Length: 229
Image 1 (cartoon, rainbow, N blue to C red):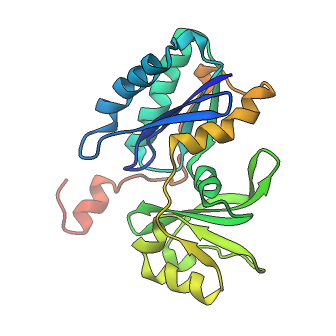
Image 2: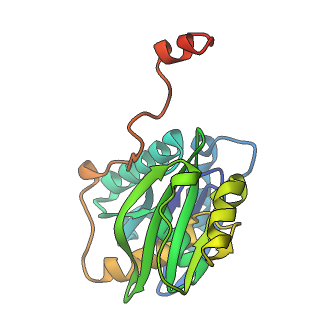
């Protein structure tokens, strides 16, 4: 089975190819737009593996939450490639990918949402990935919902970005892994068992997951704060 994975929800853009349990990953160069580097990396990855788009069994993509532009890049690239090869798509959330990278059994994934806010989700390890408990939230660091009970692990860049969140986690006795960001390799590993059982959606149905109602302040809001239109 061949699965291509695309992840551009954060500054750490990447693509990966899963082939029968083996994963090869390429990272987008820093300092350059993911829109500029992602597809050339995909072509390079497939060429090195001796694969064509039409041979893929599925394409996984980072559906979000994350950077507005980044989510559109991965989704758009996945749709374009899937249509060309009539390939099913497997959307995987960035927070579940982070939970998988942490290796924990009970995980609070916290991603910096910018604008002084945090994307967060609580996950329990399941048979083929991590099961979201409740819903994905966006909130101020001081309002991030913390888990109850022992054995929880927090992961993600929001820990280092917001000291108040780091302090709250420490006081709650939650272990911390601050350096984790979602990767295409993690997406591919999560997508593999789902692809094996025939999960997937048509390319026309793919859409980024936008948790925040407003991704930017309106002109009126900026002007009211003394900014420029």
